[in-house]
Amino acid sequence: MAGFQVIQESEGDFKGPRQALLCGVRVPFYAPVIDTDFEKDLSRFETREDDVFIVTYPKSGTTWVQEIVWQIYHNGKVSRKNIEERYAQFEKSQLFPRPGDEPAVALSSRPSPRFMKCHFPYHLLPMSQNEANRSKYIYVARNPKDVAVSYFHFVRSFGPDGDFNGTFENFANFFVNGKGSYGLWSDHVLPWWKRRNDPHILFLKYEDLKKDLYFNVRRVSEFLNKSLSEDVIAKIAHQCTFGEMKKNSDNFSVKDIDSKPLLLRKGQIGDWRNYFSAELSKKFDEILVSKLEGSGLSFDFGTSDH
Image (tube, rainbow, N blue to C red):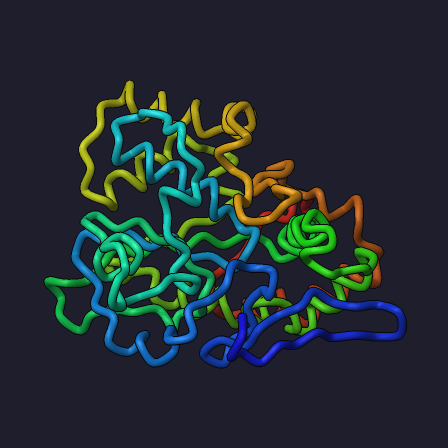
């Protein structure tokens, strides 16, 4: 990742995950090499009306919704390809071709529809000013305590590639203070929530998907203007349960890392209670959850008293 500023927070013997600074945003250093022209190319990248972006703060249900969308577009067919082959991660992509490149190397040269996932904050997502070229953006949010637990396990699963040696408490403090990749959770979620009524944006909550997957598969298909029978919607809802997806775990692993970290873990609401002290829970409430006050946005934490 030459050419990018590298950041690694430390506190005593604790070393946080390595990060690079891209467009002013911290991104994981363990990601595959980012194109050095990305920052200058971003402003001229053009979206298409049939582009689909799955946008999340990391570990908020990205892979889950990617699979739902893929099956909606393919009438319930389960792909044998790894999810990373089917979706480009926007901020890791080469946007424009260079001499000698194969056409599919650059995102701008790929055929439609283009399926992309992205963890960038709202202000960095490409959005056409021309209504006819506006893409579809599906934003998925999850309660921050479960996000922190899932993110901790994900970073730990990278082993030496992630260069992280801390405890959960270390990571949670790192996370709640906005030092994690992609910044402070509340700063990421709220701009999308405020634009939830934009006809090109669908705002989903992870917890709602867990409670009624069938209803939300239908909701996603309607947003994407895909007419599916009730049988196909039911089929997709069944195939996109965590239990079914884990049967095809090779499709949901990080390909470019030797340890092959899985992009799926437990898929539970409230697992944070197995990790958080009362003091840490209060800290998350004061720094992150309090930012939601007055916005109308709330989350299920898996208990009536979080």
